Length: 156
Image (cartoon, rainbow, N blue to C red; front, side, top):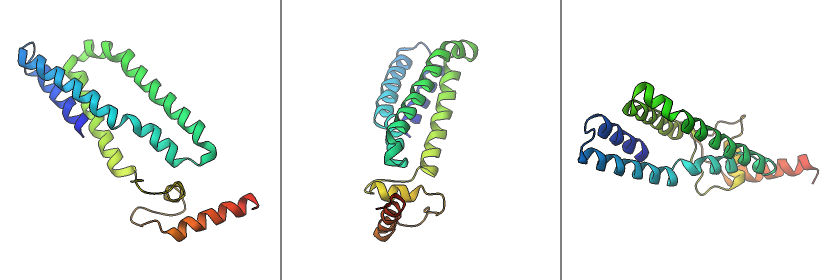
């Protein structure tokens, strides 16, 4: 959310206070804030989510694919930035970034479940397709049932 606010302030500074000392100061502050909030907010989400939602046997591959996807998307944004900013203006480019940032906030709020304080087994249960865990709490017995199912399938 803070990233979106910083990007919106950057759009305002680029469109309303263009080439004034106030606009330059606001733009620098907004960029620094955006980078800071990105580093502690959405940036680690890719790594954390891939580590949590995939089973242990796939975590390394999923984490690597998530990191590659993150870097490829960052590269596409960096490589296309100058072309897009020349075509629609700098403020227009950051308006697009602001919209995507707001959409990502909605996506995370609606579709990414809270995993704080839950074990990996409980998180795995949350992401199983055959049960709807939207409004349910994961119980210890559910975790024990999952471990028992895994042991049976592994022949233990």
